[in-house]
Length: 215
Ligand code: AP5
Image (tube, rainbow, N blue to C red; front, side):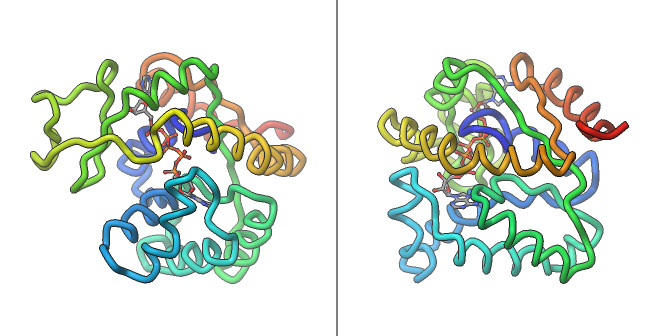
């Protein structure tokens, strides 16, 4: 977990290769639904995502249950962007207990607000495969073109200033209490998300072996 633009998706994409478990991003699931033009789910979630608000908990619960019950998640998974409310913490507990699992680590990335604005304003995403770039810190080889699939790079509609402000407020109001809940359970590890992507990854790897509140 961590605020918008802190680097959750960038790191989770790399960790899935390293750990051999899928990266389950609720943001990516919702964007895929929105990309499926005319789909009832896409139309239902669009206004929430494009305004920077949260999609209702019950709908997110159904989506996450369906995703975590698939075969490729049997050996574990990296959740990115869920849970984001205290109600979603309970939903996740229910889904995991049905699967005989429990959350064993919550890694929370933290960077100063100015760096968040820099990362989000320079982010460019592939409209086709979803690969993520940054104009300065992770530029594509050919400007405006995805290194992975050759399609055009675009700016996410929720990466404009007004929506970013709302996403940060929603994070503070609704998602920071989730961090407090996991801190109280002794599974939260706070990680400094500043610096090079590789340096952050090394801190995350160290965090996987260290849980605050336990030896
Ligand atoms: P989501 O897609 O999850 O958005 P988010 O949490 O706001 O996070 P981002 O994807 O913006 O950022 P990130 O932390 O993944 O950063 P990234 O790696 O791209 O959710 C979108 C929306 O969907 C929500 O607003 C909500 O409406 C809805 N939603 C999703 N989940 C929901 C839920 N559970 N309940 C209800 N609604 C939900 O990095 C950002 C940029 O920085 C990139 O350009 C990257 O290249 C660059 N970068 C990364 N690391 C570094 C580094 N170390 N140094 C320099 N640049 C870096």
